[in-house]
Each structure stands twice: as structure tokens, then as C-alpha cells.
Amino acid sequence: DLDVLLDALSRRSRKIAGIENRTIAVGQKVDCTVFDPELTWTFSTANNLAAHPYSPFLNQKLNGKVLAVINGSKATLQQ
Image (cartoon, rainbow, N blue to C red; front, side, top):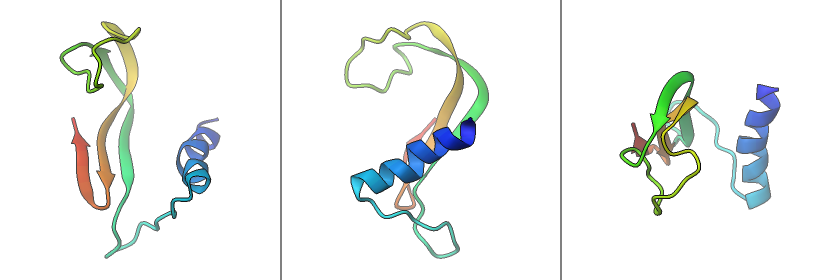
């Protein structure tokens, strides 16, 4: 179930790490990930952001992609 997965990857992981959950509201800093679950793309060395160039997913067509990561209202990743 997608809701259970999102809860595990967001709220519960922050709780385990002792990181405060932030409320999304006007005037508050934002921590979020923008994800398109319907985007199909090919993972390659040209778009690999990892520190090492090796991955079993190289040259594979993947479904879903993170488009942006916003941490403390600052974009730390934009695709």
C-alpha cells in the first residue's frame, strides 16, 4: 500500500532518527521530496548522482523519479 510505504519512508524514519516532523504551513520551512510516480526514464552514467559509477540499474528503464528535494526551504536537488 502506497500510504504505508510513504509513512515508513517519511514520518517513521524521521521519528527513528529523532528528527522533528515539520508542518507544511505558510511561513514555515519546508522539507519535502517532489516525486513523479508515472515518469519513465533510463538510468545512465550521465544522470547517476551517486559518488561511485557502478549500479545494477545502469541503462535500465525505470518507473518513477525524484524531481526535487527541498530541505529547510532550499532546493538541494533539482532535475
